[in-house]
Image (cartoon, rainbow, N blue to C red):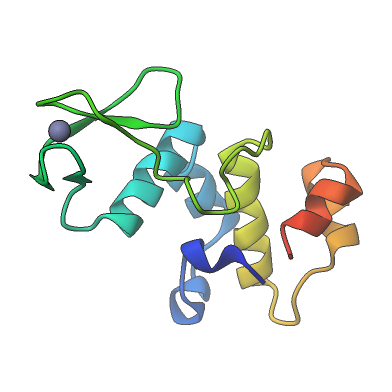
Length: 127
Ligand SMILES: [Zn+2]
């Protein structure tokens, strides 16, 4: 399973983590992106141009952040399964939630049903 970039919640926490908590934490794609950014860059984003950690702000309507000093763009989803995917981040996150919350796992077929995505998309979430 390639959803390594985002083992959202560990199994222990999962015990009391409900779908309500999930919806509250990840109401939209922006919330998912903020989480992803925090996860990938806990110390802050290092700007490749400035060559140090700088302040970054979210670029409106894009899944990227821009350096406050030089404007260089950073895509937290680059190199992850979320990159270039037309599937909303919320769907990916929900898929991870489902996988983590069901002890015996979830099949691509179930994902297809739960998320209303195509089987191909559901399948990709696993591979
Ligand atoms: Zn910069």
